[in-house]
Amino acid sequence: MGDRTIEDRLREEYFTLLPHMRRISGQLETKVRYHLIPISERLKKYEQLVVKSRVKDCESALEKLRGFQEGATFDRDRPDLYTLKSLKDLAGVRVLAFPPQRLTEIDGILLQHFKDWESDPVLDGDGHLAFKYSGHYQTGDQVRAEYQIVSVLTGLFWEVEHSAMYKPATQFRGTAESFRMKKRRAAVLNALRAFETEFENLVLNE
Image 1: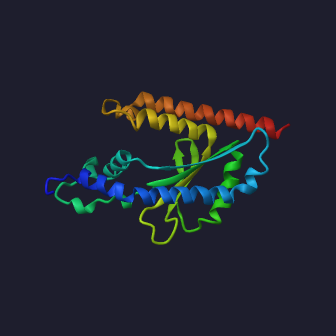
Image 2: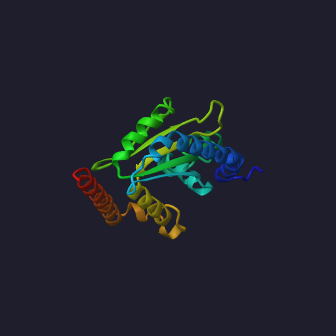
Image 3: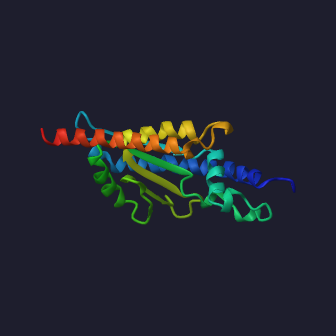
């Protein structure tokens, strides 16, 4: 038992927390869907509103916690410093909407029901990409949850990007940090925003 690494301890903690993560993500998804019914019922034919729940997988949780440490390494002499409960997004929901003009409306509705949650918007060099909030779904929950509100096009791009560059085999890690990939990523996000903006301009001017 004395030979267990910090990673071993954290993996054990993860699978202890997993049932709580699944419960919270399911409850959060249900609550978000319920409060967005007024918008869902009056969507126009070209509009979309999608709510997805998820739990962070074990290795992603470990990598994220490691990334918060100095030098991205754990202090092997102080294993008790580390717990996955410190992460804000072990359970989560993503709300995808199109066109993006719906995002602010969705944010306003959900803020009424998650008043105490911490805001941490996703930003890039050209401005606001997504609304993001974290908090405890219920008092006494062992893990925190997160919900995001993002445009459909950006959200789907993130899913592809995450699968390709943040969950790959070891030999592909670091791809996301290359200068050329960062440049291409920014170009994609700019192109998606340009499409959304032009679409909204055309629709609003009909």
